[in-house]
Image 1 (cartoon, helix red, strand yellow):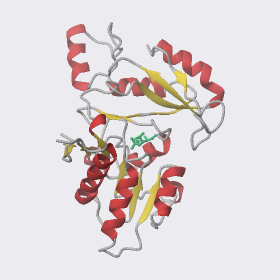
Image 2 (spheres, rainbow, N blue to C red):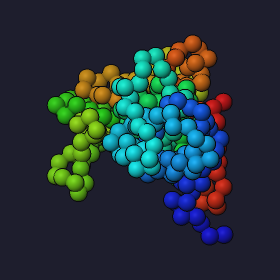
Image 3 (cartoon, rainbow, N blue to C red):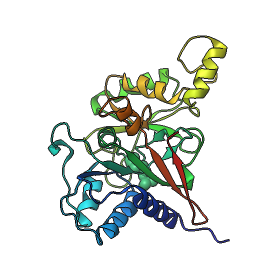
Length: 282
Ligand SMILES: O=C[C@H](O)[C@H](O)[C@H](O)COP(=O)(O)O
């Protein structure tokens, strides 16, 4: 059977995700960044042809995301204009890699800080991707953790990352747009920090009971996702880490925490054969 072009796989995943999760009676919907999210917005637009709701406001996660919302004729609202205490009904976003626990690597397109703000303030985060992103462990195919960093601090952050076991962390270049490092929407830099394939929480717990206490990476240099995220976030100069882990929005609400879910509740992967695989929170 002929393989589907990757863009078709993304589009199929986006259509299914919107069909299953977009509620036209929503008040606030978060829109992530990247190439896959364009298909999500197309699918939302299509769905809104049959239902009139002029009151939905779409919350962007950066410049590109806002452009996508505006070009589709949808109404944007800036994150910091949201009324205090109000949660987003849902947000849709892409990912660079997703593990079996629905932890994600994000930031391949240099957006992660605003994406995390939006995910944490959403009742549920729906992730849309293609088959290349589906792995059992993070850093299987995607090689490094994207980290947003204050420009003045890059040297101290680079050495702190080496001390955590990152083999060759590097400041991301701005490709063709301009010479020098790429700048994020916050005017910060991105460091890409390679680490050995990460462990899931269950694997790390099993390993610790074999080896005794200790939350470090062990001799093989493999960190558990959440622990690595926490350790990187503690480095002075780091604005945010491109690991979306810990709780999902529904678990956070079940625990009475009104925000703080970084993980998706469901991930839609478009496959080569036209099918869509859905991984849901356990
Ligand atoms: O920095 C970019 C974002 O985290 C994207 O959501 C992620 O890189 C996935 O992008 P794409 O849909 O283009 O693969």
